[in-house]
Length: 250
Image (cartoon, rainbow, N blue to C red; front, side, top):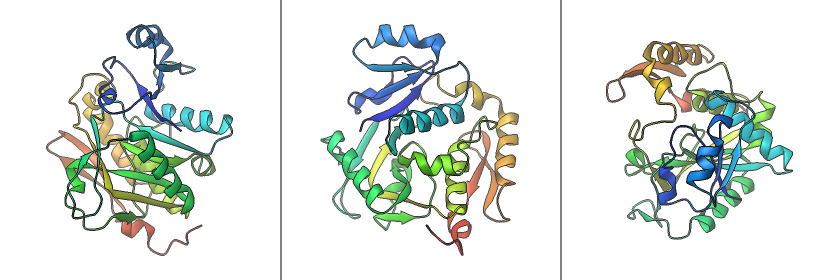
């Protein structure tokens, strides 16, 4: 298993600072440019241009299942580091062997029948008090069960953003198990690298509308829309505990 990512207008691929030999899915219109910039890398062209994030994720699900596999390991292309620690009170250090750590994550997800196993975000995981958090959403870096995603109808391609939170919430609502490890963390800073979904987030009213559309899918109090000053956007936020309460798990 390798990490798989999608990239758009970001030839520098910041994830190469830590991720060895990823699979990179790009739009047909940029395939030649990425291939020229990274001639030894595993780069694949998507079926169409301008499909958006949820379309990209659905293509990863299809690619995984078509190859006879069940899980895939996803990373955003602008994640700049991966770190881990031996215990919840230990210090984070850069992952020495990413491939070995990846297989450990895969084994954990498979052993516990998880639909998603998220890696924590460095901006939050330093304050975590438990090694594993159950019934939460995944973004940035995660191991995902492609069969479970297909079973709930896939990612919502009508959403310009928040498709990751939406699919995690629908997985939980459907009774699938999800979790996040706080012993491994990724480093990321929104809007720090030009390209990607930059043009999507510039359309603030469209982002706001998508946030309200996602929040309306779930019971009251489970998903709310908040103004996030540091991002300059209205974003959807989930109360994962409330969403998962009383839902039988597979």
